[in-house]
Image (cartoon, rainbow, N blue to C red; front, side):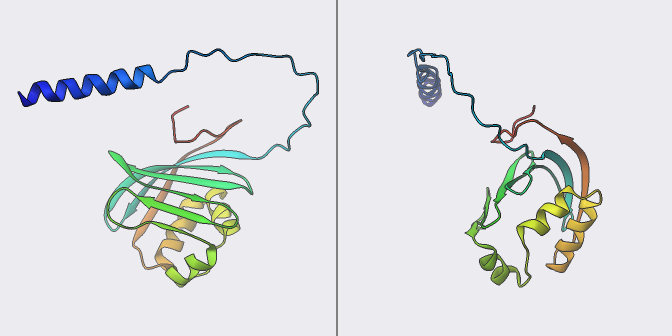
Length: 164
């Protein structure tokens, strides 16, 4: 009997997911005013492999230069993600209660080391970025090695982290 209940629940969830699509059509009107050209930002997608305290994981970092950085770390499932802007940092983990949201001053109090957005971005975009991140981790007391496995420039960034 329990097996039938699970099947019914799964079917109900699938029906709800399919039924959420809007049937309303969007009206399209020609736009006559030309939008001002937006400044082009350097957009990068960086894939990496990290070994921290003997545990290996892979991840992806997306960087919109001088604006925002997103980081996702995976090992079969997502272990955590982070977002950094010039004034704030957010980190959330899948397991445990290791979440953080705050300013760079809050991060300095937590790590006992001054870290800035510009410093993090420069490390991520540098040719020897993996080595620089490994040295930063060592200065924070972690045994970590980071290998940058791929870099590419993109026209736009997508979130959440989807393969393009």
